[in-house]
Image (spheres, rainbow, N blue to C red):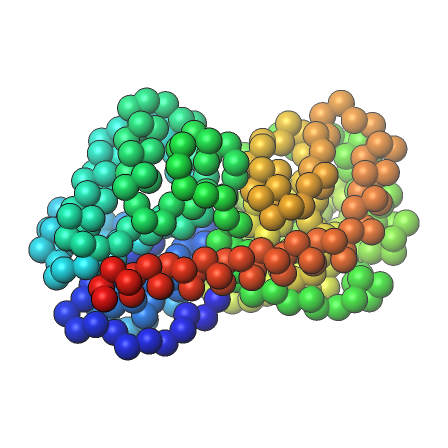
Length: 364
C-alpha cells in the first residue's frame, strides 16, 4: 500500500519495530507492511531490527537515512531515544503473531513502558493487525493494558480481540501487499504445495488425494519454499507427489519472493499450512487451501476476518476420496476468493489513511 505524501513536521520521530528472520518471506511481507504505515509520518524514522542481517533490510525496503538499531544490546538505546524524542513521537509495533506464554512478562512490561512514554509525550501508538499466541498472565494482562492505551490497536482474528478486550478486527496486513488477478482460472496450470517441515508428513491418502485432484484438473504439481527451514519437506513432497521441486538454494530472499509471486500467478490451487503462503497465493489469484493433519486455528481465524471460510480441513483420519472431493470443491471458489481479497486490501488502505490522520491530528 503506497503511503500518501504529506508535509512532515520538523524535528519529529517515528519508531518502528521490524524484527524477523531473512529466511521467512511471510515475516518479511508483514514487516514491510508495518514499515509502509510508518514511512512519511515523521522527518526521522528509527527502526529496531534485532539481529536481522543486511538482506532483511533489503527485503523490507528500509530507505536510506533510516536510523537502524540492531541486536538486543541496542534496546537501551531504543528506549532512550523514545524517552528523549521530540513532542508527539509515533511508535509503530510490528504486525504478526505475539507470543504471550510464560517468560514474556518482562518483554511486555517494556512494551507497556514504551507505550506510556509515547502517550505522555502527546504521541501516537499504532499496533497493526496482530494475533495472540499462547496467552498467559501476567504477559496477557500487560499486553492488553498496553493495547488499551494505544490509539490504534488492531487484531487479525476475533479470538485475539476477545482476549485483549479492546481494539478492533482488521485483515492481516499481508493482504495489503498488492492484489494481482494474474491468469484466468481456466488458464492456470499448476497446483502448488508448500508445507511446514516441522509438522508430520502427510499420509498416503493425502498424497493420493492431491495427485488425483491435480490429474483430474490437468494441473502440474510443484512444491516451493517460502520459509528456508521447509526446504527438505518440499523436496520430500515433490518426490511423493511426482511433482517438480523448486528449491530456494542460494537465491537472494528478494529474488525468491519475486519468483514465488510469479509462481502463484500461474497456480490454480495452493495447499499450505503457512499462513502467508496462502495470503500471497490469494493475492495472486490462486485459491488457497489448508489441508494438513491437525491444522491450528491460526489460518482459518485470520481468513475468517476477511470473510473467507471453509477452505481448511483436517487431513487426519480422512480418506483419499473425501479429501479429493474437498479439494475439487475449492477449485470453483476463485471469484469468491478474489472478491474477499480485494475488499481486505481496500479495508487496509482505509485503516492506513486513518492512522495517518490520527497522527496528523495529534500534532495539529
